[in-house]
Amino acid sequence: MLNDTLLDITQKLAKVGGWAISYVEPKSAYLTPAVYEILEYDTDLRIMLDDVIQRVVPAHRDEVMNSIVNCRTHGEPCDLEVEIITPKDNRKWIHVIAQAEMDADSNVLRMIGAVQDITHQKTDEFANRRLSERLLNTLENMSDAFYLLDRDWRMIYINRAADRLMGQERIQGFGRVLWNIFPYLMDTPLYSGFMQAVRTNTPFHYEYYSNLMKNWIELDAYPSQEGLAVYFHSITERKQMQERLDQAQHMESIGKLTGHVAHDFNNLLTIILGNAELLEQLYPLDDQGRRLAANIRSAALKGSDLTRRLLAYARKQTLAPRAIDINRLVESMRELLSRTLGVNINIALLIQPRLPAALIDDHQLEGALLNLSLNARDAMPRGGDLTISTNSVQIDATEAGRYTDFRAGEYIRIRVSDSGTGISPEHLKHVFEPFFTTKEQGKGTGLGLSSVFGFAKQSNGHVTIASTVGVGTMVDLYLPVSTTPVREVYEKPEMPRGGNETILVVDDDELVRSAAHALLTQRLGYQVLAVSNGDTAMSALKTNTGIQLLFSDVMMPGMNGHELARQARRLRPDLRILLTSGFVSPTLAKSSSDTEFPLLSKPYSQQQLARALRDILDRPR
Image 1 (cartoon, rainbow, N blue to C red):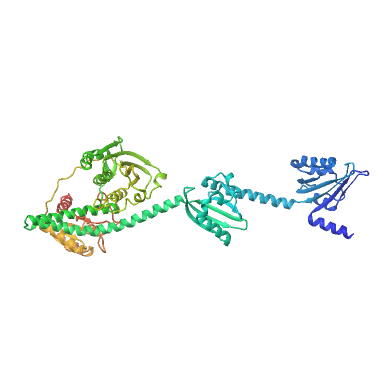
Image 2 (cartoon, rainbow, N blue to C red; image 1 turned 135 degrees about the vertical axis):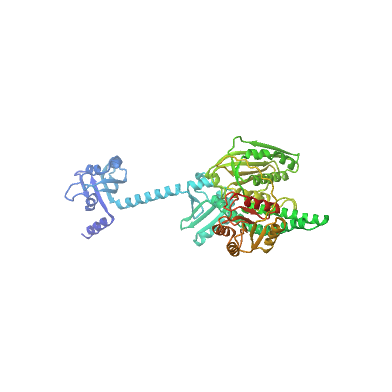
C-alpha cells in the first residue's frame, strides 16, 4: 500500500504515467492513473491505443504509428515527443517511450512504456527558440559588427556586418582562434585590452585605424563566463566630420584674428598714406624728399594690399557683386596671363558656351584667378601647362555635405589646373590658412590661397583643391549664379576735386581724425568738424544745421557708425552720409551694393576720398 502511494505521488510530481500492453493470452492493457490524468481521459473509460493515436496531431501521426509498429513487430525501442489534442480539446506535448519484452524466439510478449507531460518544457523551449531566432535576426541585421569569442578565443559567432567590414568569409572564421586568423593583432593594444577585459571582468573600449578594414573603428568588448562579446563599427565618417568641424573652427579663429589685425593696420595705413600725400603736395621738397615721400606712399599702398588679402581671408572685405559674364572675364585675362606667366607656360582656356551669369565682384575674381595662376607658375619652374575651364555644375546635398559651409545648388565652376610639382597631403590641408606657404622665404606671403578662400566664401561660393605630388594641382572655384542678366558697367572718370561744404568727421582714433581733417581742409577745401564718438556727433548735428555730410568710421566704442548714421538720418533726413572702415564685424558686414549707406574702405587715398565725397554730394536730392 505504501509503495502504491509513493508511486502515485512520484508520478504526479513528475507528470509521468506508466503503461503496459500484453500480447499473450489473455491479452490485456494496464495504465496507471497518471496516464489518464496526462491524456485527460475519464478514469472509467477504457483507453484504446488506436484512439490515442488519432489524438496525435496529423504532423506527428505517421511517425507514431511507424514507431509503434516497429516496436510491436521487431522489438525496436520507441522514444518520441509528439503533440496531441486531448478529449477536452487542450493541446499538449507528451514524451512517449516504449520497449518490447521478447521470448527466446524473439516474439514480442508485451510492450511496456511511459508517458510524460512535457507541455511546459516545450512551451519554454519554443519561447527560447523564438527569442534566440529574434536575437539572431537582430544580430544579423544590426548595423554594428559583432562577434563572439569563447574562453579559448575561438570565434563562435560572426554577424554579417562584421563579415563585411573584416572582409572574411564567415565560414573561414567560425571555430578558429582569433589570434590565428589575425596574428598581427597580438602586437596591438587590442590584444592586451581583450586579455585585461577577460582577466578583470571589465568592459574594454578602443578607437583605432584598421589597415585591414581601411576605416577608423570604435570597438567595445564585454566579458562573460562564456567568453567575450565584441561590438565594433566604422567611425570614419564621424572622424571626417569632426576634422571638418575642427578645421572650420580653426579657420574661423584665424579669420577673427586676421580681421582685427587688419582693422588696426588699416587705421595706421590711413594715417601714413594721408600724411605722405600731404607731404608731397603741401610742402616744398627736394628730389630726395619727394622720393622719400613717394616711397612712404608706395609702402602704404603695398600694406593696403596685404590687409586686403587678410580681410579677404577673414571674409570682411567690401565686395561689389554684380551679374558677370564669366567667359568674357576669363577670355579678357588671356593676354595678361600670357605676359605675366612667361613663354614657358602653355595656357589653355576651355570655355563652356552660354553659361548663366555669375553674381560676383569681377575685380576680386580677376585677382583670385591671377593669384591661382601665379601659384601654378611657381609650381612649374621648368614650364608646363595651365588650364582654366568654365562650366555650369549642379551640386547635390551629398557632394555639398563633404565640405563645411557648402550649400547644394547650381554654380558656375572655374577650374584652374596645372602640371606642376603638386602638394603633399600633409601640406594640402593647410594651404588655405593665412601665412602658410611651401615657397622659399621671401618668395611668398602665404596669403594668396587664403584670400581666394575668403573671397569665395564671402561671395556665397566655395573653393576646393586637389593635388598629387609629381602630377599637378587643381583648384575649383564655385561661384553663385545671378538671377539677373549681365549688365555692363563703365568706370567713371576720376574726380579728385574738392568743395566748400561742411563735413562732420567721426573717428575714435585721434591720428586718423587728424589725417582726415588735414586732407579734407588743406587739400580739398572743405569745412570740417572732427569728433571722437557718436554721442558728440549727434550733439553737433543738433546744434549745427550747416553740416551737409557725415563721414564716420564704422567700428567705434559705444555707438557704432551704422547706428550713428541711422540716428543722424532720422534727425536730418537730408543729411549726406559716407561711412569708412578698415574692418567690418560680422554683424555689420554688408557689401557696398546692398548697404543703406555708402562705404569707403580704409586705407583710402586722397583721390578715392575726393571721388567718394563728390559722388555723394553731387547726387540729386
